[in-house]
Length: 549
Ligand code: GLN
Image (cartoon, rainbow, N blue to C red):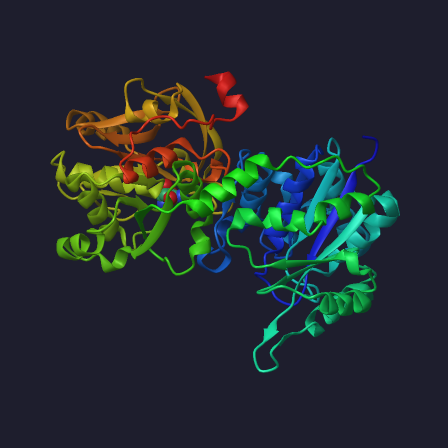
């Protein structure tokens, strides 16, 4: 392939209409036709990254292999593309300005007045170009909706980009919403007309429109949109609500999106190989038997805050042919033993979510105790592993009032404590982040589910198991079945004499893919379903890990 092609995805009308999944689905479809594709997200906010933002407003902070704290759309990208992305795939106004201002202070622009155009726009274009170096197609999604003040420099940059790399190498895709108005009994195109118009005022004419709606969009409506958006009928792709997230690319494919994009970019359109995806979706939709997982967290109202966890459970469910029903449990409601038993009695499994801060900790500890004592499968994710250690220390190892210093500074037994290199650091981007190796002890549940000796997992934490208590906890029966290769950091803690009780200091949810469910989730859902535990039938580890183990 000689020249890299660029697809820019903008959004209109309202947010949350699935712009990110549309971009991700398009990436997956183009990859299925043999192209090397990479995805990128531009976020117009001033934060340097979303790491310091409240996930209950903004949704999950997704962590990449190279330790970037990124927008949750990168999770969609990785899951659909089935590839790892890195730092360069998430660009914010904050990190663009950071770079330009640092350069200004170094004196790189001596004599010049530093301005949005060209300095900021050049830096944005530079981020697009760098990503495209060894790829056939770069898909860049611009966060927010057209008309937001914050996104203007990004839109200006992508407008200029077409002239820089040649018209035939760029495609503008606009994802819009076509609402059904009950009183009129029809779908309305006006909001889409307006957002396409807004784009044109900036100098961008959409080449393809993806129109989201809660029902089929008839040809008359599509014609109207085409007319106002200054494009042809075939370029207006209807995207009705899909029965399952992973069915989205399949319906976009049926509507001809990938073929159209390739034709417009002047690329050959070899057939798409989607067999595995069709199988996956029919397995997921066809699953009748159900397992019920109680998901314990502090704020559970915005479930997007735990998007990757939800997806990972779905992937594992799909592989087991089970529908996973999620029962969201607010840990602050688990105030005593009785409320725990009552609330969790019909759960097939208990999962304690990642989290920060002391609120709701006692309820989570109660849930871990319930799972341990009743033989209910337990999966602890990051904070969920720390909770499991605190519970075990208090109620089995006899370390009365043991706690994490994150919850209680003056606990007599700080079984979870802040990592020495985390004391007094700034809050942004300074946790233990990204990919680190973990050595698995043979003969353990971890070894059983992973079927590997060395794995690489993604991290995002400041606290860890306090090594001073490791012997006492092990003597009482806790097994530290995964550690850093030097043995210094506990990565996995599990229990003997329990059907399935395990927690990880890392976040396995970030590495689960629809076609490759994560071993821990696969094992957990299998245990919830009562099927024999063990390694999944499909290879679930990435190639680099297989090479390393
Ligand atoms: N608050 C805990 C820590 O910082 C756990 C973090 C998490 O669950 N991501 O170590």
